[in-house]
Amino acid sequence: MSSDDTLARLTAVIESRRPEAGGDPEKSYVARLLHKGPDAFLKKIGEEATEVVMAAKDADHGGPRDKVVAEMADLWFHGMVALAHYGCSAADVVAELARREGLSGIEEKALRKVREREANGG
Image: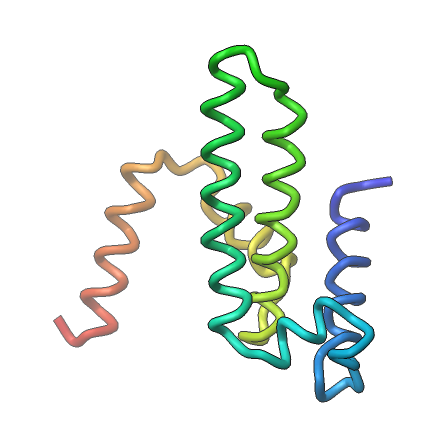
C-alpha cells in the first residue's frame, strides 16, 4: 500500500467530516475541529509541532525514535484538517514537493522571492 493511497483515503475521510458534507461535531473529532474553525485546528497544529520538537529532543538523548514518528503523524493529521478547511489536500502538498524536487533550498527560496515580487507588481 502506497503512502499516496493512505493520504488519499485520509483526505476522503476528512472531507466527509466537513460540516457541509454532514459531519457531526458530536460524533466526529474532525467535524468538531472544523466546526469550531481555524482557531481550534491551528492551536492543535501548534501543540503537535511542539510535541514533535520535544520527542525529537528526547530521541537525541536516547528516547524512543518511534515517538517522533507518532507525534509527526499527529502533526500531519492536523495539518490535513487545516488543508481541508482551506480547500486544499495532501495531494496539493505532494505536488508542491514534487515541483521543488531537484532544487536546492537556496534556489527554491530565491525563486519564491522573485515570484512574490512579480505578484506584488515589483
